[in-house]
Length: 86
Length: 462
Picture 1: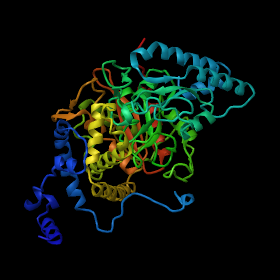
Picture 2: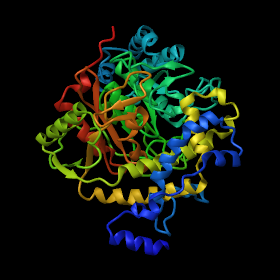
Picture 3: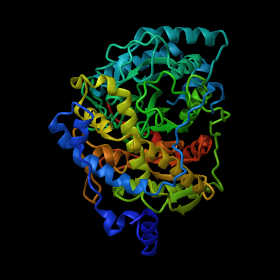
Picture 4: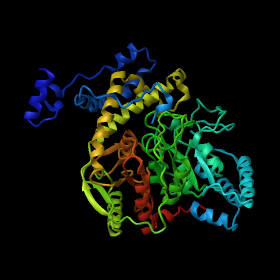
């Protein structure tokens, strides 16, 4: 289902986006593969300990990301003229 | 004795800066072997500064209320010619060539810099059980943590070693030690105090502020520290207020919000009762207590964790080739940050903007919020979980749960003592205000402090 229709269904049933059955079980990230792909020298034992923490963080973040309106800019500032900041 | 009281004694020549400094150094010599609050004690420098302060006072030059007052700073603040370790093996031999902006301001105000306080490694944690410089201990119970990451600052102020110690706060690191050590801790608005020369943990979450023995001491220290600094990209040009609450401060008519959601869940009963009782005190003083629903704090905490993990790992990446230089807990956090995606970081910063806008609406209804600072009193050294009656929770997550979101929002927050649990450990209360409204939260804090005696109680260490 497209995002728009998913939103409509979620609001119709009074649910949060990720409480819809087909959104609730998003695929967990494979942290080991990511670490290998990024060539990070994290020992396997350390990586295993991190997995549940990262999975938890991912599960908390993903539904929030779904709520960001498209035009929202990040809260990071850059200014060409250093005299003009603040 | 508070800074305010010491300043009066100095002006009246009842005591000298040299005597105050000697007293501070004696107390450090006696107590620091137990507390391990300091990484570096600058005895010679301090005595020389004190002599100069006395000479200036004799000539009629009184630079500020901090003139002649012994203070300390967390070892994140660069001090010209004096080792600045950030509690890390990586920077164990780093000797800065310049002072941090905070140090410049304290020196210009005539404060006597006694030393650099111990802390959680890289300011990245809340226990201050430092693998390289040893565990800092809580003056109320030597078997307990002082909180962190500004643990040495909390311990030094609570043990009356110094009148004020500077801390930095990225996810609660001023307010948590203030709560666990029974001191006052002020995290100003983001941009209010320059970060120049303070070793960064997170560019967009780091705040600098004082830990003190009283609210008025925090206020007069902020007055010294606040102001625009071109060298800090995030520094604000907002005018600096007169923060010092009047002697008989009034809060009549002030709208004090007490959250109905989140802040009193998973909080131990003694803490919840102490905060609610303090709210009643504020009401008796004429404040309007208004129950409010706050925006989604767990979501803001998640945003804060993503931002912190990403920025801290970006900052430390070039040092990670030598994993043996880091403690296990800090290394685990740095590894987590390396695994997050750039998209997650940018989205966290977009969510931050949304959270800021949502929180902004709250200030139409209240002038400040009153919450617990930490859900429990200080845990024991080595304790990994706490249980507030709803199951075990990681000590680090629990201790930052009520404070981290305020860093994401950049709002000013003050932690003050609000009671003791049955074990005699101090409990902390947090007052949160709108951006740049430090004067309001200091006013509320001072009124509560005047009506109670928690700030005046001291641990029995000798």
